[in-house]
Length: 160
Image 1 (tube, rainbow, N blue to C red):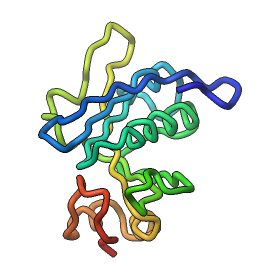
Image 2: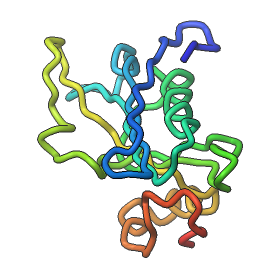
Image 3: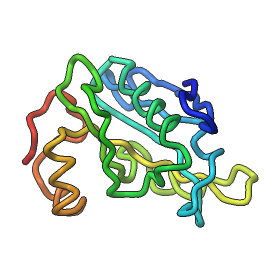
């Protein structure tokens, strides 16, 4: 993904179709962790998304966010990001919330040694509806996570 703003880093999106199971898409970024952010003291993030869809827009969307928000957003658990438009034509979702990736074991997404000063931590990106984004900002991620919703279903109704 090319950067539209000065100083932004270029980000690559690596997409896997039918992973972790048929009908799903998993994508990861590479390049976000090359940026600097004052909150990144224990590790630098890369992003991961896993959804029940074959639309590559989901992977491109996290690449776009990583490119446009590198150095500005810390991509910490509980952060909500407004995409400002529908992420994919198949879904009404327009935002993301950051949390642990659903398809990786903890040992596989934290403290990844790449030979740099700081390790890489992979952050999960979960598509959400705008009303959920606003609700998470008021009630918190933990309260949202307790609700009944399918984090892989990009066509689901809002949980709140």
